[in-house]
Length: 393
Image 1 (spheres, rainbow, N blue to C red):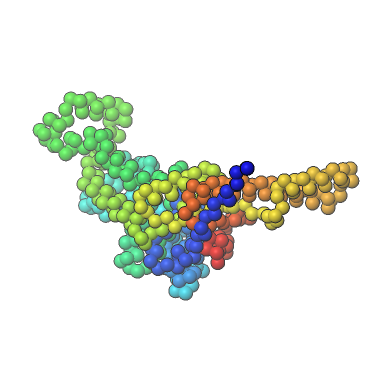
Image 2 (cartoon, rainbow, N blue to C red):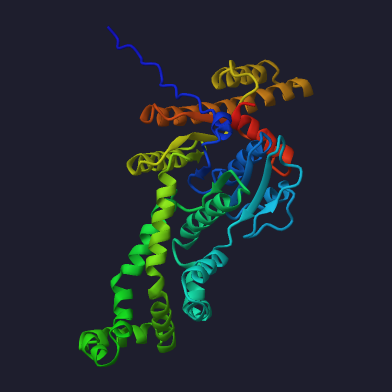
């Protein structure tokens, strides 16, 4: 007797409208691999919430120019700015774009004495690190989230913060950034550079042994004497701030685990993006962080779902054979539409198989699909259409 085929698992529906309307939810974090539509999703969720009575600030990371324009903002920077035409029932929407270096400067100014802060900000090595050090953007996104949440508590200006995480190669970079920065600050290279400054005087001569002198001499040749001096000056000045960095990272990490936070993982219906979403969902579970569900963006829809790709292609072939040599413009158009439908239907079938594979591995994760847009999102109305697909209304 042949084995019975098991019906594919069906994911529970993700109701983002209920999530955004819940006043207990204060932070929504949109995560996923780069290029899956996190920024558009974050903006659309923020707009929907603002037009249903929430006071929202959306933190975007490197938004596309058209998306910035869709929010009606010619200037999008590290300062939250109101979005005109967004908000109803007492709601409001502010938007901002993370300025990685400016946020790093704010951290320095907050945690260091004025003279130390000035010394750090003027240091050439700091200026390079604050702009390009691996993981800095992810860490500063978390730092800015903490700042916005603190301001919301202090002023009551917002009751919901929506975060678009950086377009990293891996979605896990956002969660790993504080740990990586801590490893950098605690690393052997940093300890080597701070040893002379911490020891000082004669003790410094003892600590700065022959082995350390050899290592420093080698680094000086590799990096150049001036760069090595800049690094040592930077590290010595930053040493008093190490605890502040770590404390802030711990606070933000705790905030991400709080019941008021909801993670929305964003993916496209492609193997690599869904695999990344699977890794991230597993990591959130390990860390005890609240996952609301998965948004699958850019899902192909077909006008006649009951017409399979094979049937459409067969009909096109039959039409071509029967009218060989007497093809009319109407026949050619019909044949072309059938072939186009076959291509789109094949894409839709492949995408659904990929989504079903994710669902089979994570049957408890709620899911919502967003159809592929016919054109780029370039105004608030376009964002509203995305928001309707995300929330069901």
